Image (tube, rainbow, N blue to C red; front, side, top):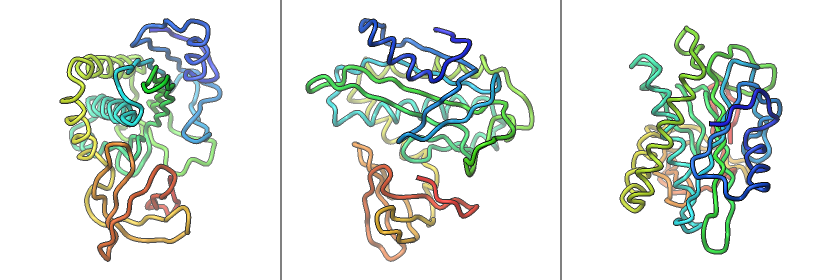
Length: 258
């Protein structure tokens, strides 16, 4: 693993390193506890207090996958992070760890981890995936306007060794990745099923907003398509399919979250 005392963004650092050396090995990991300009999905920022959290990026080379199957990378990373975090929490709290579609990690209604995956296509295959992961470990206060951040410390009431959390997450990702490469077809089915079973709000009716029309509606999650779109069934039985950023989750505090 490559430890950076400080960096603007581990994803940006790893992408720049790939431009300098395209032969970087599959499974290369870059991490820091001081990220000054973390990036989230669709240009959002990621706030992280110095020394209290983990920012890491993992290089995967899924060149055996067709581009239309790239969402499986997101599923694999999200499940590995969720499983690792459960291992640090008491059982009753660990049961509240879920994956908010498409790939945030929640504990109850709080966001504990954000994931940003940047894929590079080469012809009809995926050349590489840079998988950025930001985990709130010991942070207790946020200066920005994030609506629902939380951390391991906040939910468990104690502090954690950030490197122990890092080691657990990385070990799970690399182990699962090796298993996936050995039998991608079977592993893809297993991962997708587990991903759907791990979803935030996977049971019951919950409030959403259609991003295009502004319509507020109640719906339950019916599943996720293999390519990533979320399937919802409204209170009156209408099935709808949404791609990322097309639907917003209405959080208990009343804030909408894409």
